Length: 230
Image (cartoon, rainbow, N blue to C red; front, top):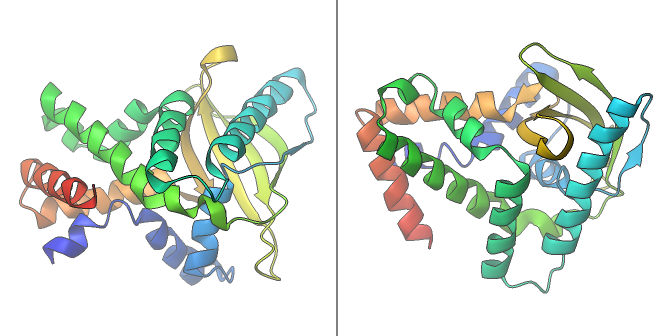
């Protein structure tokens, strides 16, 4: 029970896949969708931008993809070095502070500053160690950026589709939720086939807190699991 709940956070995409399979009948297997999630960061992007604003957003995505390919895709890179590079990419291009706060949900208000800082650090480590080993698996053509739409609250959703050569089914629809402008753009969520990764992991972490008797117990479990995986 405890070990299973500890793993809930970093296997959040598996829950996404189950929901996609049950609700959308999209034919996505667990391995395929996990590769799709990683493929979001491994781009050879074809841009279809209608406005200057869309072009700026597409440029951000393309630069992120180029950096990911350069830094992470080489199978000769040692696992420890790949983790270092992926961690740097997350900190530079993703708003991990905002994502961590969202994933913590209502427990953020109850946490003190030390707990918030530790959770953010542990959450980053879970993401790094869950996905860094998968970057060498993607062999497709990358993604195609198809446009962007403004949202309430100052975020913009960049729409794209990912080529998945391992399957004969249709491309996977992936949206990027970005916040900021110009040189301060950052990813705050990834939405695969309409299912938000952040929302899924928020639900998983809420269950984890309950399983461990509260926020302190959940953070202790994350700390232990992170230490084991080092």
